[in-house]
Length: 379
Image 1 (cartoon, rainbow, N blue to C red):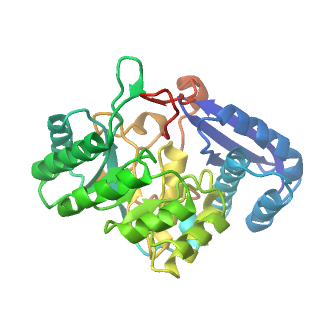
Image 2: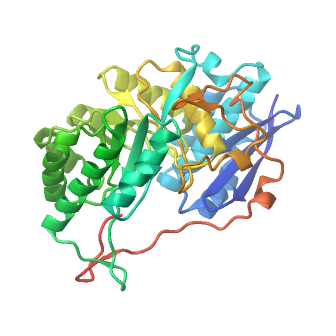
C-alpha cells in the first residue's frame, strides 16, 4: 500500500480536515489545529505532500519523524499540518487492520471518558443559571470562561481590584448554583497578569476549583513561579507544539495537568509520548479539544489507552448542546457526563459526505484587544 495524494478540506468557522489517499482506495481522515491559520496550514500540507507520495502509510513513526526532523523551520502551522497527517495515518492504519486506534496503541483501559463542557456569561446571575442548566443536562464537570469586559470602544479597562472581585463573584455564584456535586474549572485563556493570577487564586481557593487553566501567557519562568505561589491545580499546554516543551515545563513547574492538542502538537503519535512523559511525573492529561469531530475522536482514542487520563474537553454550543452532531453520520454517545469510546475501525467515526460544501469555510482570525490606555493585552 502506498500514499497517492493528500486532500485538504476547509470547512465551517475553523476546520481543516485532511484525507490521505492510497493506491488501494483506503482513506484516512485527520484534522489540523492552528485554527487562525487554516489556509496557511492547508498550503503547508501540500508543500509536504511530495515527501509522502509513494510511502507506506503504515510506517507512521517513520513519517512523523521525517516530517518533524527534515524541516529547517518549525512552528504552529507546520506542526498543525504534521498533526493532521499523523491522525489521518492512524485512522487509515486502524481501518487497514479493522481495529480501533486504541488497540494499536496497547489496548484500552477504560470504556468511556468523563467530559466537561465550557460556557460563557456576563453577570454572576447568568453564570449561575447556565451552570445549573448544564448540571441538569447531566454534566458532572463544567468549565467557565472568565471573560474580559470591554467598553463601547472595545477596550478593557478593569483595574486589579475589579478583576479579582469579578472573578470571585462569578465562582461564588456558580458554586452556590451547582453545589459540591459538580466539578468547576476556570478558563482564563492567558488573560491575567502574574500578580492578578496569584491574588485571584487566593480568592477562588475556598470554592475548590477543579483546575485553573492558562491563568497567564505561556512563559515557563513565570508559570513556574506561579505554581509555587498558589494552591490551585494549574492546567496548561494547549499551545505547546513539541515534546520538548511539555517535558521541560513538566520538569520545571508544579503544574498538575497538561493539555496536549493532538491537532497541533504532533498528532496521536505525539499524544501518546506526551502522556507517557506525564505519567512518569504523576501528571494527568486533559486533552485540548475546541475543534471538530476528528479532533474529538483522536482525543478519545488516546483517552482510552492511557492510565493518566483525567477528563476530556468536549465542544458544545452556547446552550450546552453538542455542536458536532450535524457534522457526523453517527453522533457520539453521551450519557451522565461520559462519552463512549468509539469502537469502530480507526477513529471509529465518519464525517458527513461533502462536509466542506455542507459547512462552507468562514475562517476565524482573532483580533487585537486593547487595554484602556491603548496597549495590547493577551487573549
